[in-house]
Amino acid sequence: QQPVQSPQAVILREGEDAVINCSSSKALYSVHWYRQKHGEAPVFLMILLKGGEQKGHDKISASFNEKKQQSSLYLTASQLSYSGTYFCGTEGVYDYKLSFGAGTTVTVRA
Amino acid sequence: DTEVTQTPKHLVMGMTNKKSLKCEQHMGHRAMYWYKQKAKKPPELMFVYSYEKLSINESVPSRFSPECPNSSLLNLHLHALQPEDSALYLCASSQISRGHNTGELFFGEGSRLTVL
Image (cartoon, rainbow over all chains, first blue to last red; front, side, top):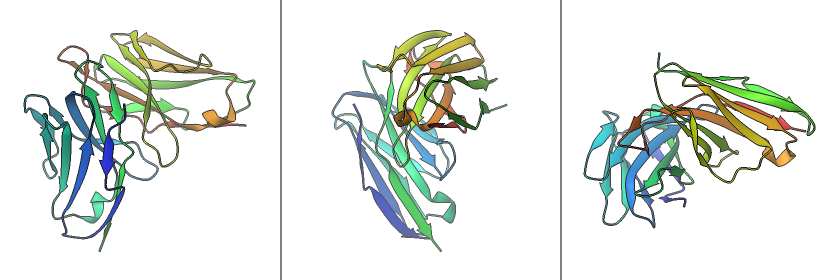
């Protein structure tokens, strides 16, 4: 079952902050975050696991509320290189497969 | 080597053709995946192989036939496809951690398929 992402799109100026949200209707084992630039493959940013373990990118942070089945990705002091489509992926406790949300297109302007 | 290599990058085929997409990784990952991605849409899971065995088939039509000959290679055999099957086909690999849960995915650049 596909997670729900919001917002659908966001436009930022360099240095501004943004938050992307991801929510699921099922109990989650993990939440993944990926960024895909136009014409390129998705690139791993972050994985958050049930129980609090995290692994990922130094300059991008995320949170995972297990009880609410929600995750948020925080883009802080955005740079031009942050532009792209951000996908959250969720894996249920019982289904062992990663399903991606519809994506959030981030445009960072100088 | 942290790359997943996919060939061909572009493929045009007719509805009666048989073709194959290939994927290779040398990171020692024991899970490999096929995803399908349409324009402006998220990747959709098609197949998962764990330890060279098919573990997930997301009700994919039989005109798509996956194969995992060894731990480094993953193929997707295509036969009698429809125009709506035109898409970017992404291969990915990951370590297997904590049982069967999905680890960090390393994606290839994809094979862009056009079915005429």
